[in-house]
Length: 131
Length: 344
Image 1 (cartoon, rainbow over the protein chains, first blue to last red):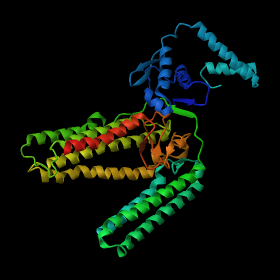
Image 2 (cartoon, rainbow over the protein chains, first blue to last red):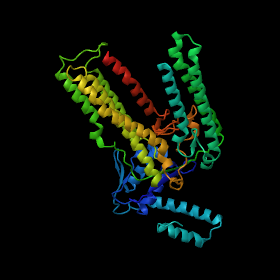
Image 3 (cartoon, helix red, strand yellow):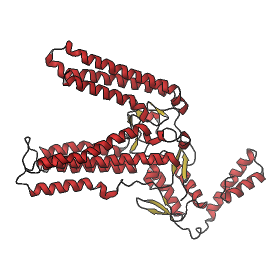
Image 4 (cartoon, rainbow over the protein chains, first blue to last red):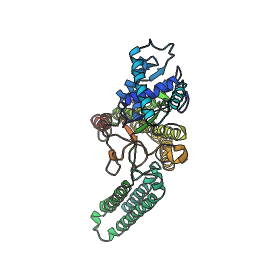
């Protein structure tokens, strides 16, 4: 496991804390910085480190376990498992995410980014590199 | 000079040295229990520390002078107690007021608490140093002593205040269990402030040394109480009491060594780390407003941590806003009560 694996959250953000944690973890998983067999810290340890309630971290872990990324281990946190294939495509969820992406694209255009710049940033994001 | 005068001089001097060292035990950017910018700690903060120390040593000098002059004015019958209590209490009061004044001045320069939290996803070692078997050592010592006492139960001398033969051993067992509970809780329920790199390694080392101190304190208690118990068996007494020091002395020396090491590396081991390696670590990840009584007590019901780094002195303190911390305190208070019931 790489040494600089971090999770961060902003308590002032409108995004719920459990979702911020899950988003960070998912990014590490998708970009393969977290590999099958890697262990994540126990729920209570991560909650103490982040200064949030245990249930917040537990919810984030459960969310990723439901997506097939993690296997939850009682008192020992969670382990990354080999995700043989993505879950069956949930069309409504994909539509929801694409709508969110459309909103973000509109916001980016309204702050002055061109379509070309947005496409290029999205391509880099999809490839796992920073835009 | 009488022995009371010597005692007074010793206590006042040790007190002054401790208060003098207190600002040094904190993290580099915590001054008088307040999170301040590093530039302030290195600049105007130093003047604040110098003034604080000047008050500490002036108070100590005054206490010593009064303590040494008192015998000339007090009748002999009240000298003993007054000579020690008066100057020591006065010196303590001056030191506390100096701390509170400095704390108040530092608060004017406090850094706003950040709402951004960062944590490492790499699980850290939360086991007890030396493993479970090493941690169970004090119980083995107490158990072996209990077997010995049982074997010689007809010869055991009863103490002048009717101490039951197994009482100290049971007390030792409860005390060691408390120490281990604290050690486990400290290893698992303290916040890792530095996320990675040298600062994180220094912090983890600092934590494990603190945990080791608790485990070794369990050994010291087990040896001391076992030696005291075995001493009540004719034929064993002198030999055992003489040898107990071979175990207790290294533990005491280790504790003195740890205190000196903490003074050098500061809270969380962060003074031993170059500022660049501390990266975005700022303060100790606890809000200033949650620290009460000049930074002495931490009360934050929204913080899930049971233990947080002390802001006054080295080591860790309990989060008084956490129910589990109160359960630990209740356990620690029950120990003397159980002991009193068992011993007498």
